[in-house]
Amino acid sequence: MSTSNTNTTMNFISTNKLTNTRVLLIGGTSGIGFAVARAALEHGASIILSSSKAEKVQSAISRLQQLYPDPSFTSRIAGKAYDLSDQATLETTIVSLLDYATSSSIFPTKGNNEKVLLNHIIYTSGTRPSRIPISPTTTTLTPQLYTQSETLRVLAPLMLGKYAKSYMVDAHTSSLTFTSGVLASKPVPGTTLGAMAGSALGGLVRGLAVELAPIRANVVAPGAVETEIFDALGVEEKEAVKEMFRRGTVLGRVADPGDVAEAYVWCMKDGFVTGEWVGSDGGALLKGSM
Image (cartoon, rainbow, N blue to C red):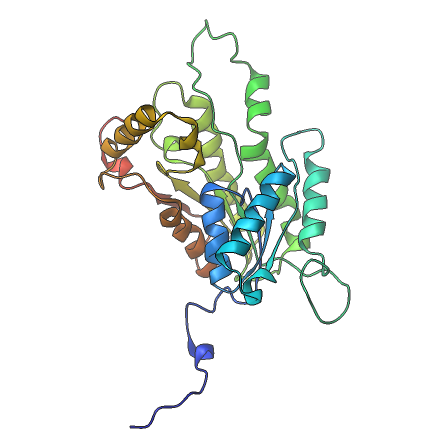
């Protein structure tokens, strides 16, 4: 039987789903976000990275250029810093970010100078919440603390939802994917604030799924993932923390960012998933107390 060199990629039902799409990754300069950026790039998307610090954005772009030096990849990488942590300027900053991410000038394009709508927004930004006990003696626990600390984790996703229809392709092939965590479903003492924020995202994506349809909205809730956060620990402390997390999972391991990145890729590629809480926690919810 003779073989043919005919290009059959147009017949692929999965790997081409992100080809020629435009994906904005907020928090995509490290950890899970960086792994999602790599996956989207490998699937043929043009990616725009953003975080609060310009040096982190440039460092992430340089790393991607080293990992994928071919021009067919490097021509699809862009990024710029935008700080979303200030509640007073949050909305205007998000509009500026979306204006940048849909600009026709950031990637080589043919045609006019009109904006190029986004296909997907991946949101992994947010600081790790401090453990604060719920007690009359906890003087730092105030209503203001919650609103200040959760600007990045809750209010920024809300504002992205507000402007999604103006900056995204209005189709079921488009999606927003936010990030919660296993503690929202299985809190431990001192993590109530984080559980509140994480749970709020579940309600947010269900509301957005209804209001933004056919654009889809979902949230990924990772368990313990070995990211750069672990680097701040000493060798012995790092291993002790990892062992604690291992014991809290069915799989007996801590995730690699590339593991959890697949959940975000699925949310982008599956045009029938919306309003969902997607767990990637190694079975942590099936175990006893952590």
